[in-house]
Length: 492
Image 1 (spheres, rainbow, N blue to C red):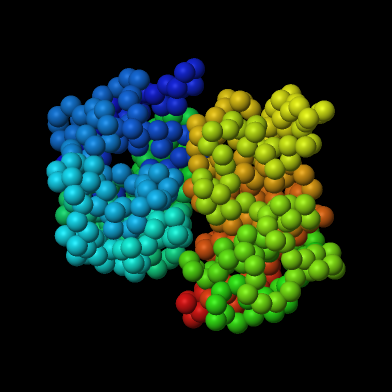
Image 2 (cartoon, rainbow, N blue to C red):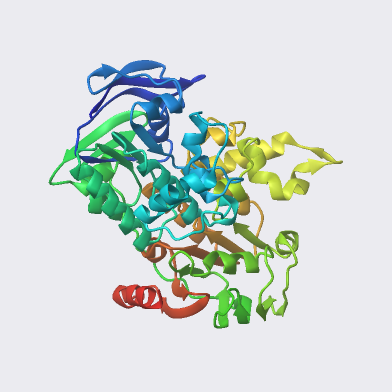
């Protein structure tokens, strides 16, 4: 099967997102689709998937006109899509088995859903992607990585004729991603065309037969083997990307200390100091305990053992309100479920935790909110029409910038960022890194991530975490990447 897109345009009101896109996907090829946040990639995917209708242009699928008006119509035609926002792919109030079988439920047929009838089929879907979770587990209780793998397992079960994956590895560990890559290569060998959207150059180097770049709603590059990765980045951004190296900042005094802290059952206790002016990255595979550590520091969960101090005084937040009042801020890993409010505009999402600073005599001052949001748009290069834009209209990477802008609105003693670069393009990652380092002088900054390259690019100090325990520690400028990778894999 092949897909041909010609002259595709899409407008939302006065905002033109796609400007005459031409794209052909040939059988048996994996095409990497690269573009900065807000370039229009996800919008194009949603048109192919039947979520949006195009404003202009045509599509043909195997030479026949193709214009799905619903996702179900696209699916019936053999077009299978896994969208960027993980929670858009699953139903959090259903369990794993129900999520795997949801397309069958929606297709009609028998009004009675018999779990026993579908149990073996659902288990085979999980086995195909190597996911070991109970079929009875609710999706809301699973980490983002497992939710993503459930969505991918369901997509692959349709035996797609055309597969589109939008940032599929953003929440996956290296081993989970490798299992996915093996499945995708098998589909490619069977002649399935695959459109693979990613900001991770490691993924693209591993999989891509071809790279197509999008900028400001237009195709700006089309690269075939041998692939010119630097040229693709230039075509995506409109300029070469500067070097990511930075000088290590000498740490100031400890701001937050933890002694004998235990965040996972059975884990060894950990000791750590988070120092003023220093950016510390804690790196670990999925399940290492990164999110549990972040939530403990932020008051979302109580430590199983140990004590913490903040500025030398005992620190034991009972809930996030205590943490924020003490100057400990956190951007959660699950952006859509734990950070943004989809029904609010950009400005209100920026100011939400600090409404008192934007009110007078009990009334909100929208002009103050708008001013702060405009400052954030300029400082972080957020792609938006203005402060009144609905947050849901922004790309995932620009939503992430809004979340960061929120926590830079007021001075912090400790800023915690859990997987801050999910779905964020290379240039935006640099923007976020610069903003963090430029404002880090009087606070401790803690970044938790599963990608070692992201940590090396940003941090003054890198700590390896596994099973809730610290396994290795190195400083920027004296990094031994091989030793760090060994510590991660040995700990796993």
